[in-house]
Amino acid sequence: MSALAEKEWTENVIKQEEIDKYLINGRDFIDERVIHEKLVNNQNPDKQQVRDILQKSLSVERLSPDETAALLNVKDEELWEEMYQAAYEVKRKVYDNRIVFFAPLYCSNLCVNNCAYCGFRKDNKAEKRRILSMEEIKRETECIVDEGHKRLIVVYGEHPLSDADYIAESIENIYSVRKKSRYGPGYGSIRRVNVNAAPMSITDLRKLWKVGIGTYQVFQETYDHKLYEKLHPSGPKSNYLWRLYSLHRAMDAGIDDLAIGALFGLNDWRFEVMGLLYHAIDLERQFDIGPHTISFPRMTPASGSDISKNSKYLVSDGDFKKLVTVLRLSVPYTGLIITAREKPELRRDVIKVGCTQTDASTKIGIGGYSEAAEGQDEDKQQFTLGDTRSLDEVIRELAEMGMITSFCTAGYRCGRTGDKIMGLLKNCVEGKFCKLNAILTYREYLDDYASEDTRKVGEKLIEREMDEIKAAPFFREHNLVEKLEEYYERICNGERDLYL
Image (cartoon, rainbow, N blue to C red; front, side, top):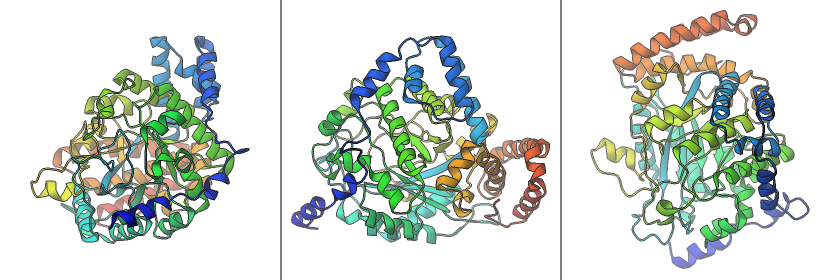
């Protein structure tokens, strides 16, 4: 593609009218002055105030900005221990003890933006540029399926060659892959394709909706207007408001499963937690639907980026656990995603305070999965990983911790998305269906992909889960025990993709 054609495409990405329609009296919903005031005015909360806030979280009510600011200002480490326990209880109440797994698939590192912290940025001459063909995407998908994954988050740089049409075609090709499982009688396929991509127009987002996009994920990176401008000097991403309202446009395009996030390490972590809360509040205000997931990646060293190594706001392990805890308490209905950026010991610790999704067997180089299968080294990456363990290893560790792995995608196919899933989550019902489907998909994994050690630990865990379900009134009252046992037996006999 010529430089002129690329420039013309870049200049036509943003549609100002698709920003203006969401503004409130010409302003967006992030007011730095108000956020800083709330953080200052809610310093030194007393223990009873904090405990009252925790009770509100335990009733699965979203916290107010003042309540969230109070939690962010807690200094007493003993009180933090109570907050960690409350966050765990909220997670168990809403989502039970399951952890949903996914794999990221990076399809392109071509990019027209110049984000200061990112290895993909346009002016990074050290980055080896590549965009996968559809056949290469299928090969990558086959390698991911061979690990046992059922869900992808597909990642694209912002560039005319990886536009909405390319993304839509790649989603269709991923869904087309079907491969015999490694050990059992089943077959492997990707049942849910989530997308992490640049903000798009409503017209382009409808293209993704038509081919069956799962969750649409866009991270604001930082909610501070001036800092955002400094970190994003050129390209469409330099427009703060175009990015801020990307998920609002997705809702209007028919995509009702949304994911927000911030890149922690660019700015004060307390401010960014407040920004995420205000983002959730505005989605609720305009659409009655909050984010399905929140992500909180910490900045790690990236190819050719000084700020990724030297920022004064890099978040310590202790503060990282605290910010995840406050997010779980502040937006109790939403899923929380911790990724393989983090080291295994930290992932173990932070999962206990409320995370619901994670990845494993992760490769973030373009073409990284098939290259690894062929024994090749990965290309330079967007950022560095802290946990390179296999899916099987991580699943076994979680089982030893009493947590069941889920590959369930049933909710999307049963219509439990958008306002429907929000209601089910807030009423602590969705987690019960997820518990059933976690067992079914876990059985699939144990038969089709698990090592012998993982299978032994997993089968003991399934026995405990089955006993819990049989003892719980909800499942008996809704005649779900018999249905689960029927489906479980059918999966043991070789059927696949059964769900409740």
